[in-house]
Amino acid sequence: MKKMQELLDLGETLDAVEQQLKVDNKVLLGVAWCREDERLLFEKHPSVLLFDVTYKTNREEHPLGVVAAVDNNMEMFTPMRVFMPSEQGWVLDWIFKSCIPNLLGRENIKRTNVVLTDGARQMHSAFDDNQEDLYPNAKHVLCMFHLVNKGLECLNCRLLGTDRDVVKGQMQAFKETIFSWCRLHGIENQKEFQCSLAFLRGWLTEQRENANDDVDYDVSHNTQVLQDFLMRNIYPHRN
Image 1 (cartoon, rainbow, N blue to C red):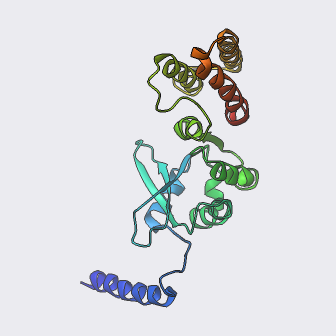
Image 2: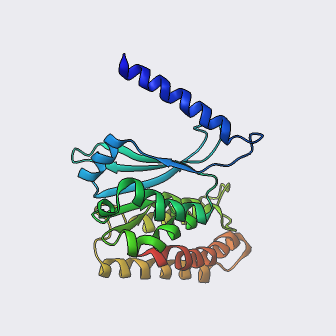
Image 3: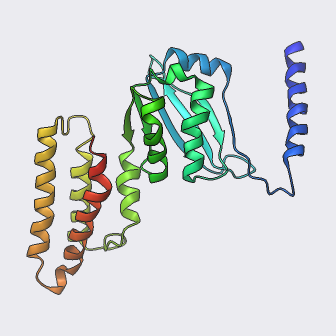
């Protein structure tokens, strides 16, 4: 009963704080928090840290950032959450530079081996800017779905919504080759990666050179777009 009364008192306190923060329902508030039991769990299992953003989870309609980790039984837990005023670079920098180190512990994140984020430029750039100082032993891994699929959706590519099998096949072959660089039983070392990269670039060049008429215009157009996307958006993250 005592514990229940403490929780009720806490709820009343937070309601009062919420009312003080509201100004015509237009204040954007950034708040990060963690539970003590999950913080202690992260202290025991700091090897893997994942960060992503979810939507439509709260009545304020703020993006909700979620930090997840993995214990020794391969079970996921979420040691930290953050209401974000936006997904701009300064917000993500605040999360990686201040929220995670202060709430989860600077010494703990120095023991992190892998940090996984999606392929959004603002997100992976914010982590990269703070990696050397705060996450010195971590490898940065990007979600290939966001980096490749979402990246291609933003291009001026004659690929989406078409029924032409040859264009669909071109897109599928391009994606599968890139995905083979990060899958288990795919590319395993730098030498294999360089061979695969040379094959992909050569294949795209061959397609462009062999597209001589109007029927193959879509394929010819896409090869140059995909070449540029490969070298500008994918290759810089090869490590």
